[in-house]
Each structure stands twice: as structure tokens, then as C-alpha cells.
Image 1 (spheres, rainbow, N blue to C red):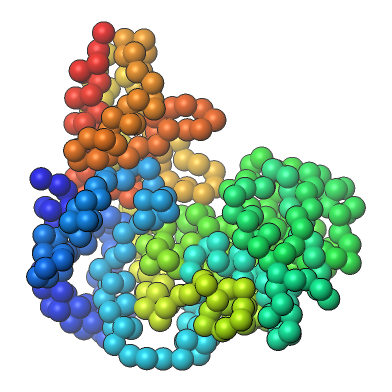
Image 2 (image 1 turned 45 degrees about the vertical axis):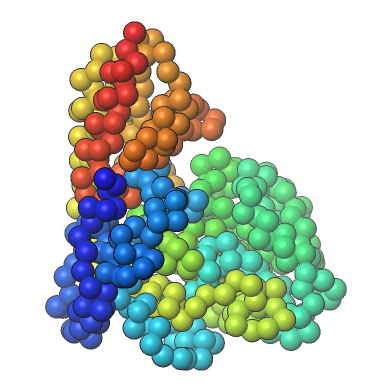
Length: 421
């Protein structure tokens, strides 16, 4: 029996109506989320979905996610109150541009962003990067908006540290710009020209770049160039939702479907009101725009507001203790096997939650990739991480559902014992 088939079930209508009542109740009456991984009740349906696991009905195996908020695994699990808010949003038609402006104002208030800042719900952090840059390039010029990625009449360069290059800068290049690589502060001074549209910073690369996050924005101010920071996976800590705006970054991108546990196809673009407004002009639902394909629906916009509200309400210290407890439990079980040990760390930036590496000596003639492959192919299927630069089996627990740490521990213990020499 799969984990998903054990989840509690209840009437979808009852769930939505019950949650809708909670949404309309005073804020103080809402129950605060004490766990970031509560099981989501499956709707009672006939036909497709009647088993409670729509994925297995399609022949797709569900997994126990010990790797984290990976887009390839579906990001995270939305809270029930987010699903309920989205269901309410689906009952009406509304002007999407008007909704985006109103949502942006509410989000800016919730996050206590600096005066003159607003927000835009996008179809993910990558979409926020593309639309944010597009808005900088075009301003509110209708002709420029239509002609992207033809940059005739516009600036055409974005400065980025060489160490900050990654697959996501494809979203920047899609606007037609040329990336100008730098490594030092002196390189930045030489690179700035009348063609410089923006200075881009990938925050997860902060430890390896020579120019750090706080200095990058200061250089942008010095040379009067807008600065953008990709902070997609940089919650927790929750304070990062406003830290970069307070530093002075002109635009900031966050994923909505990671630790915030909003819709997977949602993200946030935070920043100066004028730049955020221009980003919306370059985005869906506006036609003949570069971002027309990056549609975000009324349901996702409302769901993102609710997810942020719930995320801000959480006891983040208690969550960290729970995530560490789960790892400690697994470490204690596998530590009973001769030669197997565990170590713990918390990444400095991006997925800033407790992580665990699992090590073993020569008594186990296995590679980390072999262990990960076997667990992935098992029943239930368990996904753990294997580093690319350093081949080691690792995991985190903040996307686990209650009790899944026991399943992972049992699977690892069984596998290691069966391969002892």
C-alpha cells in the first residue's frame, strides 16, 4: 500500500466550505500551521481520482521526497487553506490586471516592504526574472514591449558575475540581451556603459562570487544601474522576503511553490512600483508580449496571498526543531549498522534548513548513486540527493510528511544490512 493511499479522505465540498468559513473568520481565529508537511486530504470522487491517488491511476509513481523543494518533483505540497482559497477564487471572473495590482499591494503590506515597493505574482521565479528584466528594458513603451526580443532603441546588456552564471540566466537571455561577465569590483566599473540595463545577482552563488550580496546592490546605486536578485529558494529564513528590498535591490524574485508552499506555478516579483508595473505590461494577460506564455491564473494569485499569510504565521523555530528531529531519528537508526555514520549541516543560502549526509566505510561496497537508485526504484519510492561535485548521499526532511522519516530509516537500514560484506 502506498503512503498516499493511507491519507485521510473527506468530501471535497465539505473541505472547501469548511475552509471557506475559516477564510472569512477573523484572523485571530485561524489555527496556525505547526507542521510544514501535514497530509493533504484527498477529495472523494467517482471515476478518475476515486482511488485517492490520481498519479498512480495514470501509472506514475508517487515518491517520498527527501531531496527538498525540487521543481522536478513538484516543488512542495500546498496547505489545505491555500487549496480552499484557490477554490473560492475559481468561482468568479475578475480582471486579471486589476487583481494583480490589488494582490501586489496586499503582499507589499504583508511583507512591510519599503515605501515605493510593490509585488507581482508570476508563474514562478524564472518568469519573474524574465518579466522583471523585460520591464526594465521597455519601460511602459508599447512599441518596445511588442518588439522584444528585438532591442532596437533599448539598452542591451546585463552585468553578471561569472560565478553566478547558471541555467536560469536563459530567462534573461530570452529578452535579447547580452550577458557581460565580471569577476571583481574593478571589472564592474569597466563593464558599466550606456548599454547597461541591469546588474543581475544569483543569491545562491553568493558564497563563491567575489562581490557579495550587500556590495552588489551598492555598486548598482553607485553606477545608477537597477539591480536584480534571484532569491528563488531563499526562504527560510522568512526575513529574506524583505531583507533584499531593505538592502535596496530594485527587483527581487522568489519561488512561490517551495518553502512558502504556495501554488507550484506561482512566484513573486518584488520591487520598485514602476518596475513592477512595467513587468506586468510585459506579462500575461497582455497580448503580444514576451511574457504572454507565462500565464498565472486568478486561482494562483489568490493562493499565493494565502500561502504567504500562512507562512508568515508559522512558528519557524518549531519547524526547524521538527526537521532536525526527523533527521536525528534516521541517523540514530542507521548508526546502529557498523561503519555507517551521519553528519549535519545547514546551507548558508538557499534551502536554509537542516541537511544530513550519510557515510559508510568499506564494509559496504556501495556507491551513493547505487543506494539512491535502489531507493528510488523501491516501493515506496524514496528520493534522496546525491551531490554532483561531491558524490555523497544526502537528504533534508522539510518536505517529508509525518511518519515518512520512519519509512526512510527502515528502508536504509534494510538496504545497508543486506549489503554488508
